[in-house]
Image 1 (spheres, rainbow, N blue to C red):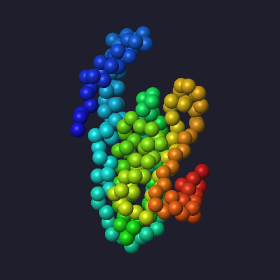
Image 2 (cartoon, helix red, strand yellow):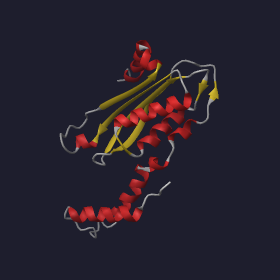
Image 3 (cartoon, one colour):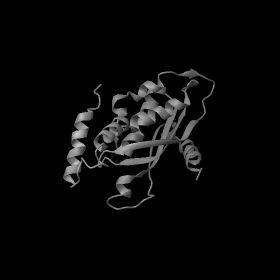
Image 4 (cartoon, rainbow, N blue to C red):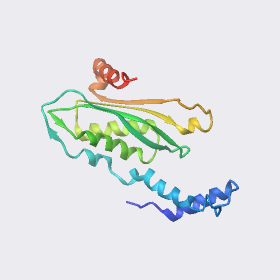
Amino acid sequence: MMAIDHAKIERAVRDILEAIGEDPEREGLKDTPKRVARFYEEAFAGLHEDPSKNLSVLFSENHEEMVLVRDIPIYSMCEHHLLPFVGQAHIAYIPRHGKVTGLSKLARVAEDYARRPQLQERLTSQIANTVNDMLNPRGVIVVIEAEHMCMTVRGIKKPGAQTVTSAVRGMFETSAATRAEAFSIIMGRH
């Protein structure tokens, strides 16, 4: 596992400040390279995590109906512009043979994948694949709703536009009724 290279980030930020015509020694900017390096260490911490480890502990419970954790806050960085996208993830699965995981573990999987340079589409699939692979459930569905700062502060400049992605596996893919029930619960809160 490689650690974040603070000194290299700090040099790069100083170079960017100079390239845009700023003085990196100006009072308000003097510590900016250090702050950005600390932020990047936090924002990209998922690069050094194995999200599947969060699902290594299962519990036996006589429950084979949908388990859904909704409105999980996510913060990630679009890999195209290194600007944030912010939103909510919704993760549901249908246990097989009564094997369930801790609810917070689903949120941890989402967070570990979100904390890396990312695309929302990939993030959605990575979460679904990991839950599917580790829990071997009857089905998994992941929906992410997010606002991308690359659409808000640059380019088309459309604040408030939400991107919604979904990934379905197992019963959620093969059963229209099961998929509709999940979407109804997830999206019905608005």
